[in-house]
Length: 186
Image: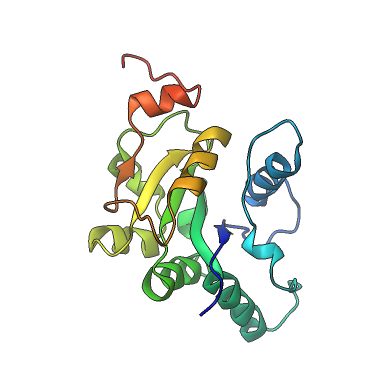
């Protein structure tokens, strides 16, 4: 069995290599938070644990690399942007393999939201692979805003040995406040 200590990060790249044209910019933001000396944000990046694969690599070579990375992961951060639901290639595969084979939780993080208190209200943003697993209850997930302190807490807290209780978990208003996020009216 693989040593499962990494965090796998999934995002919709849309075949783009321009770092500003896709959700890769949010992946790079996570890496920047991790590398910044004055920011407390620690994780072991599963993508750094396996040799890099170029975009021109054969599909099966890339698939094998993704499987190896997922097998070495304790959780997955799924970055949900406005186009993630349209990905029909790697994001559905990554979600399916993470949930069905690796049995790891998904930290669903939404860009452009300051707080998440009703994840079901965001179902229109979900890729079908996530929506179906939420619908049948096979995924264990926490839904959070794309905010550094919330993501850091979720990565530390939820993993293959400490799963969220169901598919639609989210942080309380008090938890949001502890991350420096105020929810109006709460």
